[in-house]
Image (spheres, rainbow, N blue to C red):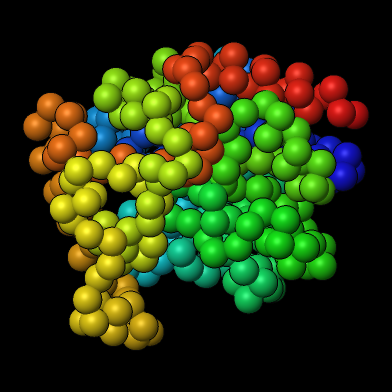
Length: 330
């Protein structure tokens, strides 16, 4: 177990086996940098960086470097081929990130091979999001260096298996595994690492921090929510997304109709479906930002870790508390 964690730390340059996962729309530069500065590794979500928070892409990366005191941070590449324009933009973003010294990449929603080739050429590492053995094997065969095991307790897009089951299924692949989902407290962090995970990725916990620039209503909702308040809906992206059960979600519903189920099953049509839901999500974000953030007009992605999140804290304090809990077990 310790060997797996040390391998992750060597690969990433972090000193704490902890990732601040890429979040749309919550991954602002100040949050990413604060986690990296404290010894974990923050991960840039490029659409959040540019579209939501308004930074010119390269300058945004340089800002994070400065705020993090040059500590390493990562980049999230969604590698699905939803459109030629999007694909070319992602290639450009990856190349610029490499030029700016980023060496840790997390890929998702597609074949990571082209990212692996570019990143390995300069000595970097690539981890890939997976939810089961099938996708883990595919990612391994494409040359990734590790896997982010997204479990059924995650916020946002989630998997279907609990953390222990997912670890047992993926461990034979021989790659470092990152547990993603359900960790909101320092004891839970240490427990996940004790299962054998090389690191833990957190999202919801870092939304409820002083550096995250999301609305205060969102942070308060996370602090007061309990596990029973988390539901899964397909109506936001076409696939299950874990959210707080606000009045808006209750009106929206949790399932899509037969047409969209058919679209998502097709090899080609699923890309059009994802594009549609992606555009719809951007429109909802802009609309909801203009409506005051009461919870009646917006949706808040969150995982079951809300059960153990009871305060808004500085991100660095979160990292240091989790680090201390982990080291106490060594």
